[in-house]
Image 1 (cartoon, rainbow, N blue to C red):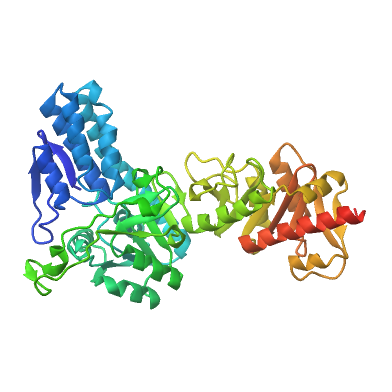
Image 2 (image 1 turned 120 degrees about the vertical axis):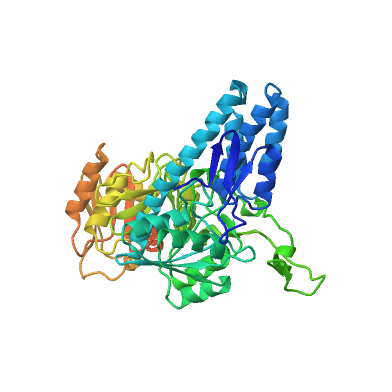
Length: 523
């Protein structure tokens, strides 16, 4: 597959996306100004593609100016500002500019390495995203709705969200694609449909306003989109029209998945309102193929992008990790509540939520629970407790969470905390094996129970956490109370969802406080 952005004989070659679908032609760009113009006029577009073009433009500048490093740096700023919303452009320019002291050849070598990396990264994330779609949607061919163009024209040569579509098709797991036309410049109709036809993938296009209706009608199994900038908390800036699709997907209960490289995640940005949303020429709206479609003098609102809030995003898949902003919206909030009560001091404690099948997300090791974000959630395999995100280190107590997910049908969330009364009771009862609460009204907070004593296990605090997990698993019975104490350590509760698990932790803490205050000895 030919690259959409490349370096050929000292020039930057890009597919001229304005000419498609009528003509496939290459634009040959020999100067910095020609590359900047190509980026601004959408000759080349797509966040990774303009990042690659920008990197090669810096190489052109370094060749042209030689030892005049100040001139190269000035042109690099000019390149980075060509389009303000996509963070990849500035990221790529900064990356290759760092090699400037080593000479023009080093700058070019870094730019070419970036191109190679883009293709490798795209294929890696496409495979990861296809796995994610399969897990979210279950068995059977998937019907995908996508927006704008996120394929090989938007990258160096493979694609992000559309690369995932290619991977699903390769695996025989794709039914068809519904592509929004993407007004006003029709990237979906002109580019995405061209790529899907080239790949022999079944597809239809629709007007953008038909997408939410298709979701409501049950005609879509998953929404797959790319991104131009992602905040550290998981808010997503993408092509205008993405936000309405996310709203409709949330209402319909359909997964909304973003596929983008790590270079699109702006870790310095937490406030989505700080994202500069490019506004383009009103003529893009008031004319169509050069023909006026509105009365002369009509004003137009023409933002190129919108921002989808993180609580509407099911997953963000990069080459390295899978972020879950919607879940991350809930887990950090609960963690902050418990942290505020003094139950998760320092970096103590951990929370998890089951995703599907054999996967769960658990809080990362060594993080303050008062300041968690979606980036602090690690995907793990509950059959082993091992992290599925490359390089990630989940909480030390992950084996306890995994044991509960394996052993308790319907377990959807686990909370492990160190509330003072529960921790004190666990310490006083060390070696007792159990504690019995049989006459406090708050036991109703654990749900309907069989008649008889309300018994909670008191586990030995082994240095090897898997031993604690094994002890707990051995004590679980079909009618077991969904709570456990760990001597000189803390408490663990679980339930079908995070809210229930948290409520049960509150009830357990109150039970222990009452037991301590009334002097009861029910071990």
